[in-house]
Image (cartoon, rainbow, N blue to C red):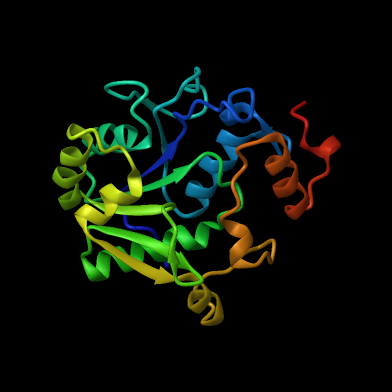
Length: 215
């Protein structure tokens, strides 16, 4: 299944990284920065990604779309990123979700094209996950309205636009989404927001601390 050529991919990298103690985007994962890992997920899905809302110089890795106003959270980065592209759909993945398989992005985009829903999200155990998200351009006015009203929570903004969810477990059972690491779907959505969380995802990915260091 090939990714939609009318779709754009964006890594959300504008967080404060306060719990990590340093910029998450540049933390080592499998011998390269987390930002490179996230960009690689998109490229494996057939999308050439950009970076939304960087807090440090990341232009050496991919083109960077700056937030219009800093400090307004990922929803601001999502709106700014979408305004930078003529794409019908945009796929968003935070830099701190390093275990998401690229095949999940491909399927979510496929589902979004078929259903025409404003926002398409994965669901795990019956609960919608906020990311990765595939957003239709038609959702942009609703997202802008939420941001203008000072409501910056992505999940609430997505819900205001209209959400469709896809059960990840069923995709795995049907063989429509696969993970080369053979991790369970519940492990795909583990964040790397703190040093402890980073160590956990490194272990799940089969990466020791020595191998995780950037040369």
